[in-house]
Image (cartoon, rainbow, N blue to C red):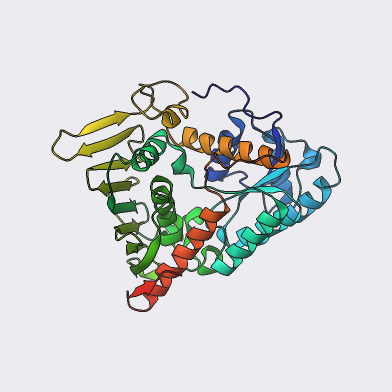
Length: 388
């Protein structure tokens, strides 16, 4: 059980690029990173407007002298300090991720980056090469994967509780953009601008989250080929999709489906994953994140509750407040930031962290690769394509 006692020797000196005033995701990053005293926020380039960024930085208790006008200045100035930053979180629009992440790695900093990591697999592979050369951690913000129920599902599948995995059905389909809300909402506008968001909207913004859940739960499954169709139901969003369906064939013969949508009218969030095996199935819904549905063929369905002693020890280890109390998104993100910190410290001390899983650079590469293949399939008429 996590109770806030230290996991690492000293808090990691940490900065943010982006995530300033008005950034919902910036607040989630800060709250999660700071929760267990694994990180200490000491610097930032929080806003494209330097004055506004400095004002915000001071309001989150950062020394005004370490509130920088841009990330390049921050990396250069912090490198001159004995107490300079060791890690940085990138919470900026998609089109900037590659450039900032590369600069951070070149400055020998650990990185936590919003997804997608970049726009092309070639760029992603380049970042992976640099990270390995510099011996740096790159964490990807797949924040839902830190829930206890996800860890329980991972252990159940690995232990053979479900038997041979035959099907994985995934969806992340909300309804909040069922109309052209981006015409009045600046925070939504950039998400449908190809210059900023890249070659896809919901495939990258939503689909990669649930895809990574499947990779956490069933890491041995590898996609062999896929077929994707995508639509722009709000016509002004074309060529970017606001709805997409993907079918995947895995190398063991299993099949997977993923529906991602921003126009599922009436749905609050709609992220679900169901894994079907030869003996049993499990299902998790992020609107009820503390429960995992477990269905054994021929027996009544069971609801496995977070924090209970009948779970696998690795799932109970992620518990923070005991069974019965509701945990949510902030706890999930905090669990990931805890793992990021432990891996960062291990590398800095010349140690290994092979027993710590988290969404790392490989997950970032795979997310970009999946988007590219989906777009390639959809833009060629929804045909099957070999996964490459």
